[in-house]
Length: 259
Image 1 (cartoon, rainbow, N blue to C red):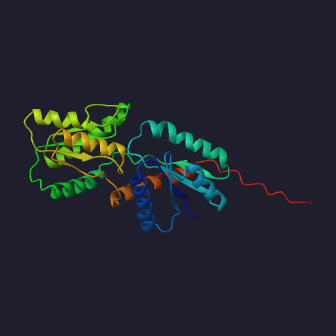
Image 2 (image 1 turned 180 degrees about the horizontal axis):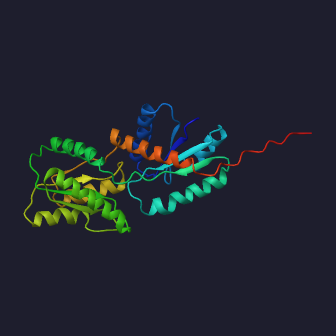
Image 3 (image 1 turned 90 degrees about the horizontal axis):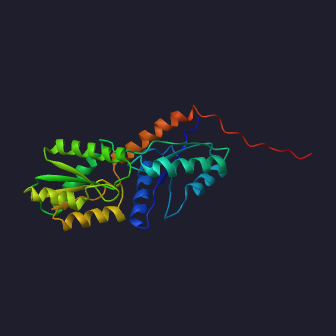
């Protein structure tokens, strides 16, 4: 029995570094699972669209696909955009069995990646002392999504025995600048900011700019490609692959024979 194809569905960005990160992740995944068909697609801003990828797979005879939203938050894009893509895809390609996996989510394993990125930044900046942390994320109008960031920030602070604040670039408060300034007002002069973004782009750049202007001594790079992110992708894929078994079978194409 052939394993379902895996289609990574990223948000997309006008910043070419973002798409490059997604394609690098797909390359990493292919090296880990050379038995799987793995493709990248994007909701917006850059090609290919999920429909282009799914159409190609359908034309090649692929029968089952797991679409994995490459998102940390289960907020607007996960609740609205992704289901719309799945519904439209099932309509366009009725002979494909398609299911969406869960988003990556703010999994605890991401803290290991965050620590490596932060250690690299501290080394480059020759920063030897920290007395507070800020965990910067995109932010959402969904309070549950923001609460997940706050939970992860708390775990990060406990790991390093440092006070920590969750901050958001948009749609929620405090901003990274406000969070850094608040720690400085309390007398903490060595504040580092962790970048809880999957790839470089407009929002992480904005978070870094805001934080450094407010006096942050270090701002880590986005999470990027890592073994932890790849394992998380494959975990979500595996669960969704099992869920495919409960879906009704897709209709088989009807072959019409000439008289």
